Amino acid sequence: MASFDDIDLPALLAGGKRDWDRFVAAAAPVIHAVARRVVAAHGVSADEAVDVAQDVFVRLCADDRRLLRAYDPARSSMSTWLAVVARSCAVDHLRRRRQAHTPLDDVPESATAIEDRHVERLNIPAGLLTERQALILHLLYDREMDVAEVAAFLKVDAQTVRSTHHKAMLRLREHFRIEA
Image 1 (cartoon, rainbow, N blue to C red):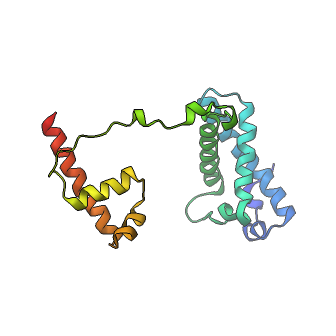
Image 2: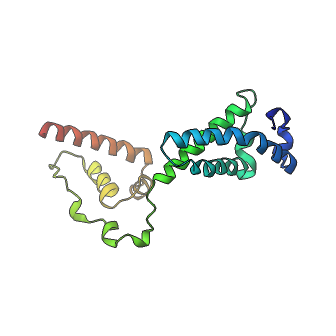
Image 3: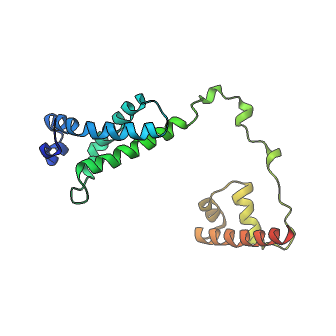
C-alpha cells in the first residue's frame, strides 16, 4: 500500500504521471472512506461515493492543480487535508443531487411567467418619503434598475443611492410598523 511519505509534492505539482499514480494510490483509500461515510450519513446509496471520489480527483487536477497547490504541509497532514477536501466535495455532490433536474423546456410557460397580479402595491402616503427617496425606490423596484444604473441616471455616487434607499426603507418600515 502506498503512503504519503512516498509522495514528492513538487514533482506531483509538476505533473509527472508516475508521481500522480503514487499519489492516487495513497490518497484513494482516504478519499473513498470519507466519501462513503458522508454519503451513508445522508442515506444515499454507497454507489454515490465512487462519484464523489471521482469529483475529488477532478477538483485536485483542475486549473493546473490549483487546489493541490493550496495544500500547506505546515498546517496539516496530507491525509487530514484530503479528508477535508473529500468531505467538502461530498457535501457539494449531495447538494447538486438534491436540486431539481427538470429541463426548462419541460416546464410549462405559465409556471415560469411572472404575473403582475401577484405583486402587491404599497399605498405610501404622500409626504412620507422625500422626492429623491420616492424616485430612487421607483427606479430600483418599478423600473428594475440596479444601483449603478440609478447612480448614472441621476448623476450621483452609487453610495448616495444606497444611502437614500436605506433611509427610505427605514421610513417605510417605521410607518408600516406603527400602522400595523
